[in-house]
Image (tube, rainbow, N blue to C red; front, side, top):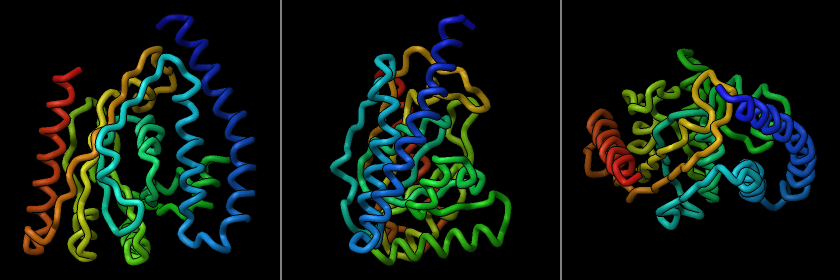
Length: 247
């Protein structure tokens, strides 16, 4: 591991901490100003998109390409599902610059500044393996979908350690069927080189890509959650293999 990479990583984390302090103050002010007329928090979410993307903007060695953004709604219920390779996926998916509510593990909401901003955005927490938390998460997602706000979930439930797409859980697909809204697959590649699982060393060169695929109507699956789940996973696996081959 080169000394340059270590120094760059230290610089990155220092910049992230300092910038987050300033940006959280901005988020707090924006939340207070927009809450009376922006009940769904769209403006604050888009501000949070800029906050996350800032770390790509300032790093000349990190590159992100987003394809198919036009397939995402500005308004209207939808369940976005993405494969999950690293902590860097969060930064990357904010680059979609479309309104949605994250579903994220509850401990992330306890993080100083970033977690506080997640609370301001009213993203949806979940405690993995806790049945009561899963039920509460589904209820909160139903609330946002009923208001025409998309949600975004990682159906694998946790990051992949080897880049291969893990088995999907049912939650996202149950919601899409019950709420009669489309599933929109989102495929990520190259993000594992940002911040690998359990790692804090930043890679010097990253070429991340996001591809938004065509929405999938759950009506064609006659209420079969498992069939919809397996179909969407296969679509993501196939597209990820195609994107990896293009690199």
